[in-house]
Amino acid sequence: MEFDAVLIEPRRQAMTQAGLWHDRTADDYLAARLVTDADGLALSAFDLVADTRRDLTWAELDRLASRVAVGLRRLGVGRGDVVTCQLPNGWQFAVTYLGCSRIGAVFNPVMPIFREHELAFMLAHGQAKVFIVPQVFRGFDHQAMAERMRPDLPDLRHIIVLGGDGPGSFDTVLSDPAFDASAAGLDPADRLGPNEVCQLIYTSGTTGEPKGVMHTANTMFANLSPFAERLGMGGDDVIMMFSPMAHQTGFMYGLLLPLMLGARSVLLNTWDKTRAAQILRDERVTWTMASTPFLIDLTTAVEQDAIDTSALRIFLCAGTAIPGPVVERAQQVMGARVVSAWGMTENGAVTTVRLDDAADKSASSDGVPLPGMELCVRGADGQPVPPGHEGELYVRGCSNFGGYLKRPQWNSTDAEGWFDTGDIARMDADGYIRICGRSKDIIIRGAENIPVVEVEAALFRHPAVQSVAVVGYPDERLGERACAFIVPKPGQTISLEQMTAHLRSCHFATQYWPERLEIVDALPATASGKVQKFVLRNRLRTENQDGWG
Image 1 (tube, rainbow, N blue to C red):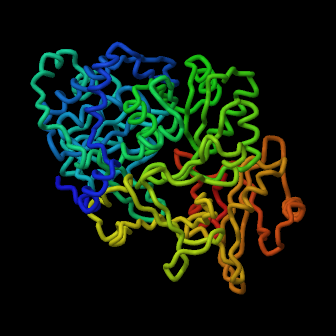
Image 2 (image 1 turned 90 degrees about the vertical axis):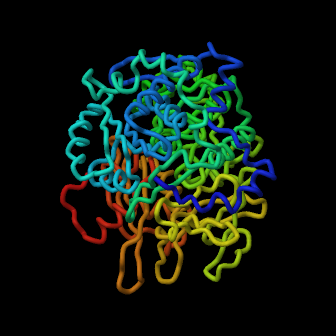
């Protein structure tokens, strides 16, 4: 398939001359590891469902990647073909990506939570030639789902199943030891170049058709190099990843970052806060990254079981604003630095706080841009707004994506390279930003913008509140009103009167108080922990109370 990554070539020369694109691929970084540390431990994959682990050295990782490459080649997969992978975190995910790269195939990770509704579009749009699924994961039969979809996907030639021992199994098709003899026949000329699309990853499609984000080795590693430098990371780090590797967080920072650094990665295929805390202790994990719900869970587990986390230096938290009390408690309990960050599938992490910033900076800021990236906050007139004022956030630089597959009209990038993120933010005089919400998440009540992030942070400080999301709903007189969806802590509750009394004590203007309160058992969220506010807005819009919680 042809990939219309039209945003790569216009900036290729400038990015290369500036030293921001290093023209190195995953294959190059793995080759370097084989020279310097072939027998070093590269990856430890924990299957928490089966209660097993698998350790791989760099040499073993290389050998398994070549088996996958040979297996895919025998299926007729070659340059430009899309291989869709719905596997959970594990060594099979890692070697499949590396195997694809060796034969010029494009890797398309999709979340294990996706079902026919999402996958039918993604597989057809990306013209996937191979679909790799677990046989059964978390009680769901992925193999049966894939087979049901096959008749409507004319480009799909092969379904490969992880689990079992049939002719279409992963072990038979992609991991046969007999393939080792054919590895020498793989032609290095088939490998993807640094400016060719190597990853096709779809946005969640929470508000419409999913968009196929195209990345190259240059766009992804241009993010990882300054990211690692700012956070003082190196080959001695042990990087734990429990965010799904089918999400950009897990893919870039659980797979590519350790590969680039020569650091060991520790992978968990599902989330269990108690086991995660124990593994973090036992493996002497130094660094991890996830969204706020994971940080809260891990802190709780560490505190409850008195887990030794002395090796942990950094928990990088992104995806949503981190309430101050969460930062304070996590840093006190685990002894690690909580680092806030902001980014998108389209560009990876764009901002982080610095390690020499004040300890509470992560509660009030999403950081400053990494080298090679620029930010601009614009008003409704398209002009930059003064420091401290909210506006639409634009970003440009080395890690911006190559465009949306077959939808260049949606690239949202102007002639000067500025990408419209769809986020609302404010920037202070020192260049630190604070994400205030998505442009569609703004609540305008009687011509007054409600500072949603600040209201949520204040409500989170209430002793009965475990998590909260504030969204708008239509009002004939005021245009919009605000509703707070609150998940109480176990054994606790909160009333509308108690909520407003709390906001009063926090000195919020009355106009900012949510007029409505909904108590729920859980907030709808993506697998990476981002609250799906559109679900909450739809509930308010339809006033459908059936089946909630």
